[in-house]
Image (cartoon, rainbow, N blue to C red; front, side, top):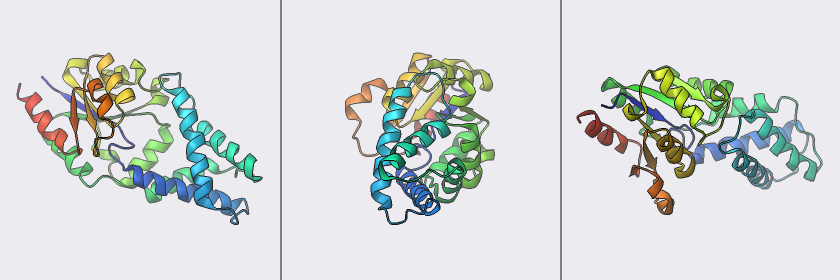
Length: 236
């Protein structure tokens, strides 16, 4: 019997478009504080995204390194190429912009509440620093909706390593077969969940991840579709 639903954060609860706007504003503020507003912030943002993505790909399934350190390193690489200094308060800038510009999917709150109305434990499992996720969730007004929040910082490893999933299950007091995980990354979310015995749901709104659908137990086009899947599993 299903007792718990765990959700990813970026790309599942909050939009990638909103993240792009957030990161663009981080770059704009960094350039402003560095006195380099002459630089094209969109170009700098694109370079920053490239550096950050490359660093995070290397960390998949590996021991946890603070995201603030990874993001700072990515920005420093870009800064060195363009001859400016990264402000010492870079992480504070990052959190402030996430609080200001983060954007939930339109059906996120309704989906969370519908799952909770079924009496299920609703939690988050995310590759995140604790201060980032707490500040972001509170700014979005949904922090108190979750029964548990498990981060890569808590677990000491990044998804798809089994530790974040096992720790979340332990905190919820449920067995793997009593839980389902919802995310937008087939390689990290679906594989990680299934490796510990949880069911997995992929949110793939445009079908661009079709070649990896085989990693997942269910595939939906929007988050609210998860409610019907869960209803079917609860009734079994």
